[in-house]
Image (cartoon, rainbow, N blue to C red; front, side, top):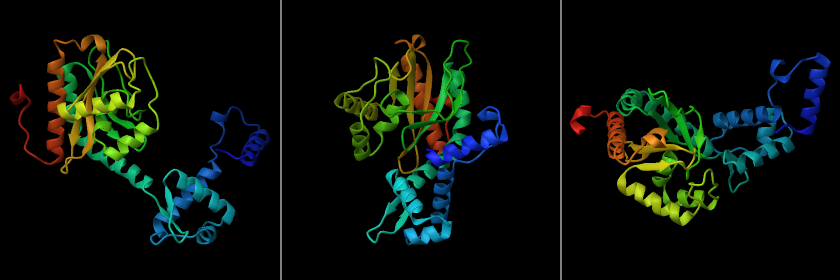
Length: 285
């Protein structure tokens, strides 16, 4: 967020330059954000044993007061932590972000052929998701070949508790993280969103037992989705593959076939991540 002085400086700059709308004016980085990123970069390169406010102040050419405010803000969001000796080091949030980025590159490359095949076999849109720090991130999609279809945006972050992908990822998180997420509240997105923690825990247990999640209209009205987990060598869920489309096409007669297709695609991707030899699709049917 810009401070009052930065806002006034920006307004003065545009008045002085006679600039038009903001979007056509020259780019000016947000000063406070730029300082925070410089601080994190310096800690990445020099902060092994931890750094004090004075050291950071000298290295960055900023006052101690500014450095202290930056550190306290970054600490609040998990980017830095303060040790017992009052020195600071990087926290776990950068590691979480890095792990998401690394998973995206490998999983997307491996999953892409299976996503294309799944879209062709089911006629529905296909989505690849990974768990992020604050929800589930869509990292790749294949649109349905049908005229009536549901499209999903790459980069979209969806909540843990609403929709098939979110609940699938939530079900396989460590118990302590599940409890933390539930304690933060469960906002309602549609009339079908589960907002009762006890009911949600029951459904998460069922998802773990059956190996997939199926929802209708919990996040987006009228949209149905089926999601299955993608595992790494340590049996951690590193991603999930989903199909989604109009709820009218996810009929009782068609549902078993759709579930089987999604689960088989997830198993194939998991095997490919392990470098295993894969059977042909037809063997599973």
